[in-house]
Image (cartoon, rainbow, N blue to C red):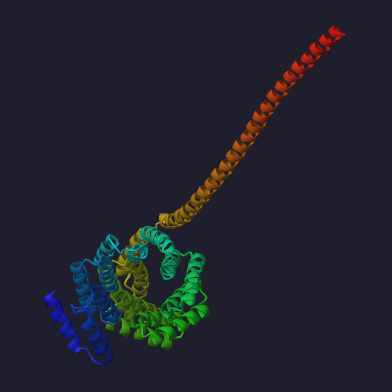
Length: 446
């Protein structure tokens, strides 16, 4: 811990301007042992995300500090958050092995203060990694598990996040209408929450689906709205992605100069923050552009760079796309033997990524989720129906008992009246007999 503190102090000294002021203020809170543990950990967590989207190395230092302090103080919610932050940092570098390791550790954190939403967030992150690795079945499985927990927790931002992730898988599977449905549901929630970053992400995803459908004007419109928001929000990573998206649309619109400018800006920003996934995408987009205009050597260079990054990080889906384009560029350049090698690699990747079972399994996960919700609702309805039936039965029993009781009272009263009637009759007979005897005696006297 001491070495970690020294590294953080050095980082703060080297920072400048507004960043140094914010960092210094938060660090004074995080490092003050006289303050409550939760206050210190909140400041340390804020420091992690202050650096997350533009300086991963610094973010890693603060996330590690947060994790060690949280474990030391036995603050399990912050242990989970720190592990997810470390997973996010590894994911941004396309280090899928370590990102999965951290996300699974976060998912397995149990104890006081661990909410359903926290567990769901870890499931969403796990699904994200599997999606990038081309394992859509596992991605959807984790997404729908997470969605169920977010809904139970009534966590609207979490539900919106899962809708986004599910929509992206549908897009990757070529199911554009399903993808649009989920991304628009996510957008509606983000607008309700007035979350500018969430709105920008939804715009970007909707633009991507329209691009895949061939509606380039709609795609460009959504991408430009995305870029405006991301510049306003100072999202460097998001900007690097959107510059690339706009550049790829201009490529399809045959506007070479505009496309080149946007794609180079994407490569510049993503390289600056070492965002390997976007770096690979920028190289692929540039390879596309140069291939379209017959600049085969430049195309081959960029596509080879993209494939190298994909191989080192395990991005199977993107590598498949790059291998196909590289095959075309090499063939046009007259390098038939080299082209054949990359075509074979493309076929192997295509068969592993786009198994027909992926679409069936993804659909099954969704149906399982829908069924589980319906089953839960039916169960609740059955419980309610059973309660009503029991109440009705009890009411009927009470009515029956009352009726039987009434009959019993009437019977007893009738029996009492009958006995009284018999007694009265006997008394009348006795009186009548006595009267007769008296009358006979009187006759005898006369």
